[in-house]
Amino acid sequence: MTDRPEGRARRLSEALAYFFDHVEDIRRQLAEEESRAAVDALLLAVRDDGDVDAAVRRLNARMRAERDALGLYGRTRATGAQLTGIGGTGRGPAVYLCPHRRCLRHHWADDTADASPTCDQDGAPLRLKRL
Image (cartoon, rainbow, N blue to C red; front, side, top):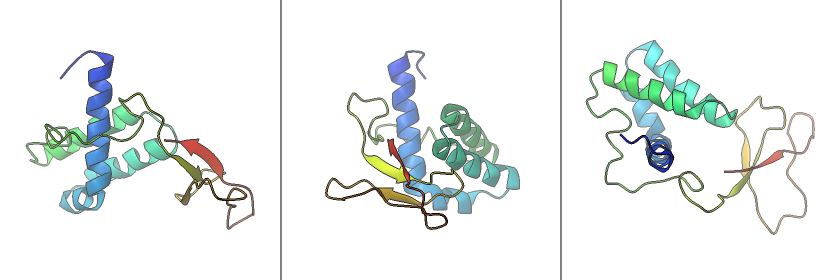
């Protein structure tokens, strides 16, 4: 583990990339409710701009507590997997999200679209966020 900001950012990016590629597998492997709640907490932290680093650390600890020797961080070593825009210099893709932050509906931004997509519930335009 590194104390340098770029090292921490890369480690977090790699852990998130692994998490999103394997979220359903991770959820199935966790036996304890507290551990499955840590998966949901990480999803909420990402969606709501919460403390993602703390949520990743909590899930890693829960995975290790359930005798997963590698946890979340251990599976990312030497994979090079990273999420766009985290730990790198470029800006990530844009995505439209729920304007009320109530659901996980999303729509990838498209340069060819004439207008932003709208909420199915009340017609409000979805909010644009850069990943």
